[in-house]
Amino acid sequence: MGLSLKASRHPLASPREQLRIIGNGAGGKRFQPFRDKLAEAGVGPLAAKAIEVFQINVGKLCNQACKHCHVDAGPDRTAENMSRETLDLCLAAVRRVGRPRVDITGGAPELNPHFRWFVQQVRSLGCRVIDRCNLTVLLLDSQRGLANFLAAHEVEVIASLPYFLGSRTDAQRGDGVFDKSVAALRKLNALGYGRPGSGLLLNLVYNPTGAFLPPDQAALEADFRRELRARHGIEFNSLYTITNMPISRYLEFLIRSGNYRRYMERLVGTFNRAAVAGVMCRTMISVGWDGRIFDCDFNQMLDLEVGYGAPRHIRDFDPDALASRRIVSDQHCYGCTAGAGSSCGGATA
Amino acid sequence: MAGYYRDDDLPRFADMAAGAPELWEKFESWYTAVFRAGALTEREKSLIALAVAHAVQCPYCIDAYTQACLEKGSNREQMTEAVHVASAIKGGAALVHGLQMRRVADKLSM
View 1: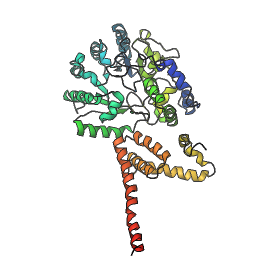
View 2: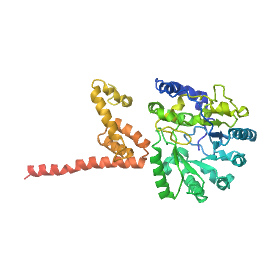
View 3: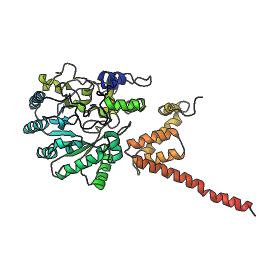
View 4: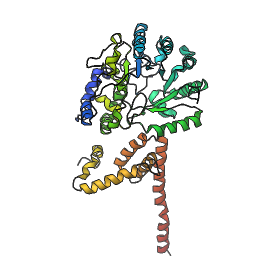
């Protein structure tokens, strides 16, 4: 398993360096600023319209170190974990929003020592909870009973599985990850996840395993359903296709493999005006492990806090100001508006 | 000239409109319509295009339709089989001409 960019002291561990690179264009060619593209298309500037999803990134610790990870998460990221005090502030903020969907991500969010306590608290408020799960965490000795816990609290599981074949999945997520993921999916199915009428939602996430855009979501979902059922007897509810953003480890891959210029041209060249209305930042906020507030998890990893006067820390949470805030954007945002669009819930157009 | 093929020519394909814009427009609208889903899916059409790209040995088309196939959800196994189909037809096409060779040889021989 590879080290994180941070642990290997790679220059791209720095958000500032990532922003410098994507701001400079590629091969001597500068790309139109994203905000100008929105204005030209008559859909800018971007502003939030509600807080329907309250996403919390509880830490960067993960038992995997996937090659495309925008968080630069991994086993060596032990320093960044949300504290109980910050989780308490999140709970207070959730209460003030009403009943948003509470979307818990990481790293492997389950590795935060307060994860189960927090899920119980949020569920007691009557909110739907989403766990963005890497699947293999369900098999760790330290996480015994986790799958049962998730089922008992009717937590929606959104699980990463980039392909229905082992070779492609392992190429992105590490040797042996596919077989473990299949074992974890069977465990979830046995508890009722992904089964009709159980009320236990199991949704899968596809990320391209290379420098290309995702396929049509509906067509790929049909492939996944057919192949996972036939090969492994696995059932799930929906498949979400998510475009890889040109940041962090995926940016490192693009540059190292000589695909950076072409990928950026692809993102910019397939800008889809119709995808803008559904971008996730318009209906969510994203809270970082240290309590800072962002427009989305990608902005969080680039240290681009909410702007234009919106409160920047969970201790100053103001639902009204945040629900109508102007969104902070940069060149990576082309990733969410390319082709069929992309969000935490898949395609948007 | 440094080389006959340049990868930065691919995104400049539309520059061929210069000199004959009406013909380019006809080509482009026909080309776009061909690859739209119809009786065949977009994925199937991309796999056919990938196979033909190999048969006509066009590096631009191989580049473009490798990416297109991946973006339509095809995997390497399927794409490799498509290339084998093209190769089999190319190989078979050469081999079946052997019958012509034999006919000519028969005619020329005592």
